[in-house]
Image (cartoon, rainbow, N blue to C red; front, side, top):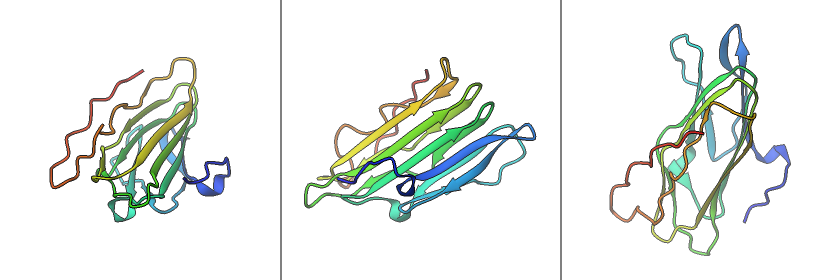
Length: 165
């Protein structure tokens, strides 16, 4: 299993802040296999960041680590380009997806990932942690990981509906 130390060098990162009354991506760093894009959208109050993975998924022993920071007053829509495939493990190693969020006061953060789609015999774990203000207007979906492998010549089910705090 990968080492989950606090060293920032092993983490992809994105920071959203208010710039001239609009939320903007002010810092971004992508480490393979994760790619962070910030599509051009019509002028608006929110920042949209899209997560993608090279090769469409994670192999056994692979790890995507992402730190998300939302500064005071910012709005973020964080989505994924498509589902993330978890390829089979032939030696018992897990593929891991770690997301760490730090949200300041008066933030709207909506996180809408497509589902993980584990191949038969895949081993995976997903962990989301964060620091939040006392009553954040934040929507972080839960239950988007299928309970059983679904990628065995069948179509994946849609993700579970988000649960908002």
